[in-house]
Image (cartoon, rainbow, N blue to C red):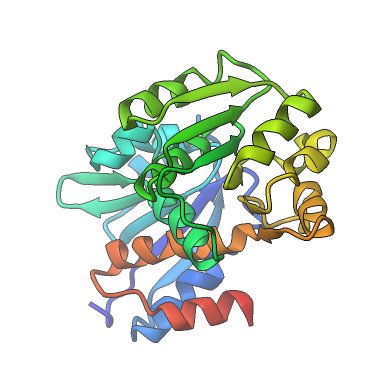
Length: 273
């Protein structure tokens, strides 16, 4: 297959900042897939179904970033159990019958927490900032690591309803709080870890409150440091960069696109060196 031209890409809007091409191209070259390409394609959620439908057989896989993750799940012929569970897909893989959707974002959060040195989460409480497309994969990852109680910080309680429903399915009691500083500070002070899925522009008012927790994974990597990361590090805590999430979610994508084990060392070197 390495002698054949194969194509893959990341879809999103905006997508120009994506570091996924570095990761995937490093992986393909390390695997000897010298004719494989990987590009960025600007694509909104509304544009995604048509774009995906006209791609030729040379297209083996698509990484999907915001805002197209729900659309990616809907356009797929088949879906993994975890993609259905979290209600979104960041991965589309070509099959004989169409496209298969998966959510390797779960691997991204779990792997970043482990590699970042997160404390043991068995029976612990955690805080998730935000209730959007990355929050639900974060909830599943936290459940897989043994978290027992979740606080969701959201500007709109109604928007957090799907996250609450998922928490119930996972057997993790959850509550929603708003962005009031003292309430956020209390929740984060009691938490073992915080996972922030909020845009950097949404967090300045609560950054110091979030820093009451000594370990924070921020899904953002551009710009860095985010207000939350800056506050956490200033308080002596650990702030894990979203690049660690990006790396860990890409392993599964590479393996599903190529059918080969991901060359993890080469991918990490491409991102961090």
